[in-house]
Amino acid sequence: MSQAGGNFRLRAKARFADLPHAPHIAHLMSHQSSFIVPIRSLGPAHRQRIAEHLLALDPQDRYLRFGYMASDEQVWRYVDGLKFDRDEIFGIFNRRLVLIAMAHLAFSDTPDTAACAEFGVSVSKRARGRGYGARLFERAVVHARNEGVGLLFIHALSENAPMLKIARNAGATLERDGSETQAHLRLPPATLDTRMTELVDEQIAQTDYNLKEQARNFLNFLAGLQEVRQGVRDARHKSGQ
Image (tube, rainbow, N blue to C red; front, side):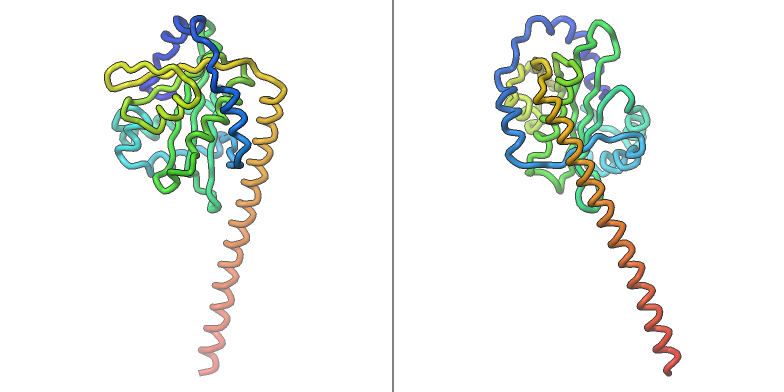
Protein backbone atom coordinates (compact mmCIF):
# COMPACT_ATOMS: atom_id res chain seq x y z
CA MET A 1 0.00 0.00 0.00
CA SER A 2 1.34 3.45 -0.83
CA GLN A 3 2.33 5.68 2.05
CA ALA A 4 0.01 8.40 0.74
CA GLY A 5 -3.00 6.16 1.20
CA GLY A 6 -1.92 4.30 4.30
CA ASN A 7 -4.67 5.75 6.48
CA PHE A 8 -7.57 4.70 4.26
CA ARG A 9 -8.66 2.03 6.76
CA LEU A 10 -9.89 4.66 9.21
CA ARG A 11 -12.00 6.42 6.61
CA ALA A 12 -13.29 3.14 5.26
CA LYS A 13 -14.89 2.03 8.51
CA ALA A 14 -16.89 5.25 8.78
CA ARG A 15 -18.06 5.35 5.15
CA PHE A 16 -18.64 1.74 4.21
CA ALA A 17 -22.27 1.47 5.30
CA ASP A 18 -23.35 4.79 3.79
CA LEU A 19 -22.14 4.53 0.20
CA PRO A 20 -24.62 3.42 -2.50
CA HIS A 21 -23.61 0.90 -5.13
CA ALA A 22 -21.82 2.65 -7.99
CA PRO A 23 -24.26 2.82 -10.94
CA HIS A 24 -21.46 2.57 -13.50
CA ILE A 25 -20.11 -0.86 -12.51
CA ALA A 26 -22.27 -2.73 -15.02
CA HIS A 27 -21.11 -0.40 -17.78
CA LEU A 28 -17.53 -0.85 -16.64
CA MET A 29 -17.84 -4.63 -16.91
CA SER A 30 -19.56 -4.55 -20.31
CA HIS A 31 -16.94 -2.15 -21.71
CA GLN A 32 -14.15 -4.56 -20.78
CA SER A 33 -14.74 -6.85 -23.73
CA SER A 34 -14.38 -4.15 -26.41
CA PHE A 35 -10.70 -5.00 -26.86
CA ILE A 36 -8.33 -7.34 -25.07
CA VAL A 37 -5.29 -6.15 -23.18
CA PRO A 38 -3.40 -9.09 -21.65
CA ILE A 39 -3.02 -8.29 -17.95
CA ARG A 40 -1.36 -10.87 -15.74
CA SER A 41 -0.87 -11.22 -12.02
CA LEU A 42 2.68 -10.54 -10.85
CA GLY A 43 4.57 -12.43 -8.17
CA PRO A 44 7.86 -12.23 -6.28
CA ALA A 45 9.74 -13.34 -9.41
CA HIS A 46 8.71 -10.04 -11.05
CA ARG A 47 10.05 -7.82 -8.26
CA GLN A 48 13.04 -6.68 -10.34
CA ARG A 49 10.86 -5.75 -13.30
CA ILE A 50 8.49 -3.85 -11.04
CA ALA A 51 11.44 -1.90 -9.68
CA GLU A 52 12.73 -1.17 -13.18
CA HIS A 53 9.31 0.11 -14.23
CA LEU A 54 8.93 2.42 -11.24
CA LEU A 55 12.54 3.65 -11.34
CA ALA A 56 12.07 4.58 -15.01
CA LEU A 57 9.23 6.98 -14.11
CA ASP A 58 10.32 10.60 -14.25
CA PRO A 59 10.11 12.71 -11.05
CA GLN A 60 6.65 14.09 -11.85
CA ASP A 61 5.22 10.64 -12.57
CA ARG A 62 6.71 9.28 -9.35
CA TYR A 63 5.13 12.21 -7.54
CA LEU A 64 1.71 11.40 -8.98
CA ARG A 65 2.06 7.67 -8.27
CA PHE A 66 3.27 7.85 -4.68
CA GLY A 67 1.97 11.25 -3.62
CA TYR A 68 5.47 12.50 -2.88
CA MET A 69 8.82 12.89 -4.65
CA ALA A 70 9.98 9.31 -4.18
CA SER A 71 13.73 8.79 -4.36
CA ASP A 72 15.28 5.64 -5.81
CA GLU A 73 15.80 4.38 -2.27
CA GLN A 74 12.13 4.93 -1.41
CA VAL A 75 11.03 3.17 -4.60
CA TRP A 76 13.19 0.17 -3.70
CA ARG A 77 11.76 0.19 -0.18
CA TYR A 78 8.25 0.11 -1.65
CA VAL A 79 9.13 -2.75 -4.02
CA ASP A 80 10.87 -4.75 -1.30
CA GLY A 81 7.82 -4.30 0.91
CA LEU A 82 5.28 -5.62 -1.58
CA LYS A 83 3.22 -8.40 0.02
CA PHE A 84 2.37 -10.72 -2.84
CA ASP A 85 0.73 -13.19 -0.46
CA ARG A 86 -1.81 -10.57 0.62
CA ASP A 87 -2.14 -7.97 -2.14
CA GLU A 88 -2.56 -8.37 -5.88
CA ILE A 89 -0.17 -6.81 -8.39
CA PHE A 90 -1.17 -6.65 -12.06
CA GLY A 91 1.07 -5.87 -15.00
CA ILE A 92 1.06 -5.24 -18.74
CA PHE A 93 4.15 -6.27 -20.70
CA ASN A 94 5.24 -5.21 -24.18
CA ARG A 95 6.59 -7.70 -26.70
CA ARG A 96 10.08 -7.39 -25.21
CA LEU A 97 8.64 -8.37 -21.83
CA VAL A 98 9.27 -4.90 -20.43
CA LEU A 99 6.70 -3.99 -17.79
CA ILE A 100 5.02 -0.86 -19.18
CA ALA A 101 2.08 -0.55 -16.77
CA MET A 102 1.24 -1.94 -13.36
CA ALA A 103 -1.41 -1.69 -10.68
CA HIS A 104 -1.31 -2.45 -6.97
CA LEU A 105 -4.51 -3.63 -5.33
CA ALA A 106 -3.76 -3.42 -1.60
CA PHE A 107 -6.10 -5.23 0.76
CA SER A 108 -6.78 -4.10 4.29
CA ASP A 109 -5.05 -6.19 6.95
CA THR A 110 -7.32 -5.27 9.85
CA PRO A 111 -10.52 -7.20 10.71
CA ASP A 112 -12.79 -4.14 10.99
CA THR A 113 -12.03 -3.05 7.39
CA ALA A 114 -11.51 -6.48 5.84
CA ALA A 115 -13.87 -5.67 2.96
CA CYS A 116 -11.79 -2.68 1.83
CA ALA A 117 -8.95 -2.31 -0.67
CA GLU A 118 -6.95 0.49 -2.27
CA PHE A 119 -5.96 0.87 -5.93
CA GLY A 120 -2.81 2.51 -7.30
CA VAL A 121 -1.51 2.53 -10.88
CA SER A 122 1.43 3.70 -13.00
CA VAL A 123 1.94 3.68 -16.77
CA SER A 124 5.22 4.28 -18.61
CA LYS A 125 5.27 7.53 -20.53
CA ARG A 126 5.78 5.78 -23.87
CA ALA A 127 2.66 3.65 -23.25
CA ARG A 128 0.26 6.50 -22.47
CA GLY A 129 -2.94 7.11 -24.39
CA ARG A 130 -3.82 3.43 -24.86
CA GLY A 131 -6.25 3.11 -21.98
CA TYR A 132 -3.95 0.87 -19.93
CA GLY A 133 -4.74 2.63 -16.67
CA ALA A 134 -8.46 2.10 -17.17
CA ARG A 135 -7.94 -1.53 -18.14
CA LEU A 136 -5.87 -2.20 -15.06
CA PHE A 137 -8.60 -0.62 -12.99
CA GLU A 138 -11.24 -2.85 -14.58
CA ARG A 139 -9.08 -5.90 -13.88
CA ALA A 140 -8.60 -4.83 -10.28
CA VAL A 141 -12.34 -4.25 -9.80
CA VAL A 142 -13.15 -7.78 -10.98
CA HIS A 143 -10.55 -9.31 -8.68
CA ALA A 144 -11.63 -7.15 -5.74
CA ARG A 145 -15.26 -8.24 -6.16
CA ASN A 146 -14.23 -11.88 -6.35
CA GLU A 147 -12.27 -11.44 -3.13
CA GLY A 148 -15.28 -10.01 -1.30
CA VAL A 149 -14.22 -6.35 -1.36
CA GLY A 150 -17.17 -4.02 -0.98
CA LEU A 151 -15.37 -0.68 -0.86
CA LEU A 152 -12.51 0.32 -3.15
CA PHE A 153 -10.42 3.39 -2.39
CA ILE A 154 -8.50 5.36 -5.01
CA HIS A 155 -6.10 7.80 -3.44
CA ALA A 156 -4.62 10.39 -5.79
CA LEU A 157 -3.26 13.89 -5.89
CA SER A 158 -5.90 16.35 -7.07
CA GLU A 159 -3.69 17.21 -10.06
CA ASN A 160 -3.62 13.56 -11.20
CA ALA A 161 -6.33 14.08 -13.83
CA PRO A 162 -6.03 10.67 -15.57
CA MET A 163 -6.48 8.75 -12.32
CA LEU A 164 -9.39 10.88 -11.20
CA LYS A 165 -11.03 10.48 -14.61
CA ILE A 166 -10.83 6.69 -14.25
CA ALA A 167 -12.45 6.91 -10.83
CA ARG A 168 -15.14 9.34 -11.99
CA ASN A 169 -16.02 7.22 -15.04
CA ALA A 170 -16.48 4.22 -12.74
CA GLY A 171 -19.02 6.17 -10.71
CA ALA A 172 -16.82 6.75 -7.68
CA THR A 173 -17.55 9.44 -5.12
CA LEU A 174 -14.69 11.98 -5.11
CA GLU A 175 -13.79 14.17 -2.13
CA ARG A 176 -11.04 16.75 -2.34
CA ASP A 177 -8.93 17.60 0.67
CA GLY A 178 -6.35 20.21 -0.30
CA SER A 179 -3.79 18.70 -2.67
CA GLU A 180 -5.27 15.20 -2.35
CA THR A 181 -8.46 13.60 -3.57
CA GLN A 182 -10.01 10.47 -2.09
CA ALA A 183 -12.34 8.41 -4.28
CA HIS A 184 -14.67 5.77 -2.86
CA LEU A 185 -16.28 3.12 -5.04
CA ARG A 186 -18.85 0.72 -3.62
CA LEU A 187 -18.59 -2.67 -5.35
CA PRO A 188 -21.46 -5.13 -5.81
CA PRO A 189 -20.94 -8.77 -4.81
CA ALA A 190 -19.14 -11.22 -7.06
CA THR A 191 -21.10 -13.16 -9.66
CA LEU A 192 -20.42 -16.20 -11.79
CA ASP A 193 -19.61 -13.78 -14.61
CA THR A 194 -16.92 -11.96 -12.62
CA ARG A 195 -15.34 -15.24 -11.54
CA MET A 196 -15.29 -16.64 -15.07
CA THR A 197 -14.05 -13.30 -16.45
CA GLU A 198 -11.07 -13.35 -14.11
CA LEU A 199 -10.20 -16.96 -14.98
CA VAL A 200 -10.34 -16.24 -18.71
CA ASP A 201 -8.40 -12.96 -18.40
CA GLU A 202 -5.62 -14.61 -16.43
CA GLN A 203 -5.39 -17.50 -18.90
CA ILE A 204 -5.20 -15.10 -21.85
CA ALA A 205 -2.52 -13.05 -20.10
CA GLN A 206 -0.47 -16.13 -19.19
CA THR A 207 -0.63 -17.43 -22.76
CA ASP A 208 0.35 -14.01 -24.13
CA TYR A 209 3.27 -13.81 -21.72
CA ASN A 210 4.50 -17.30 -22.65
CA LEU A 211 4.34 -16.50 -26.36
CA LYS A 212 6.26 -13.25 -25.86
CA GLU A 213 8.85 -15.11 -23.78
CA GLN A 214 9.26 -17.77 -26.47
CA ALA A 215 9.57 -15.12 -29.17
CA ARG A 216 12.19 -13.22 -27.18
CA ASN A 217 14.19 -16.38 -26.51
CA PHE A 218 14.05 -17.35 -30.19
CA LEU A 219 15.20 -13.90 -31.30
CA ASN A 220 18.07 -14.11 -28.83
CA PHE A 221 18.93 -17.52 -30.26
CA LEU A 222 18.91 -16.13 -33.81
CA ALA A 223 21.09 -13.21 -32.74
CA GLY A 224 23.60 -15.63 -31.21
CA LEU A 225 23.50 -17.76 -34.35
CA GLN A 226 24.20 -14.70 -36.48
CA GLU A 227 27.26 -13.92 -34.39
CA VAL A 228 28.54 -17.47 -34.83
CA ARG A 229 27.98 -17.37 -38.59
CA GLN A 230 29.68 -14.00 -38.83
CA GLY A 231 32.62 -15.39 -36.88
CA VAL A 232 32.89 -18.36 -39.25
CA ARG A 233 32.79 -16.05 -42.29
CA ASP A 234 35.45 -13.80 -40.79
CA ALA A 235 37.66 -16.82 -40.04
CA ARG A 236 37.29 -18.11 -43.60
CA HIS A 237 38.08 -14.70 -44.99
CA LYS A 238 41.27 -14.46 -42.94
CA SER A 239 42.38 -17.99 -43.86
CA GLY A 240 41.89 -17.21 -47.56
CA GLN A 241 44.16 -14.19 -47.48
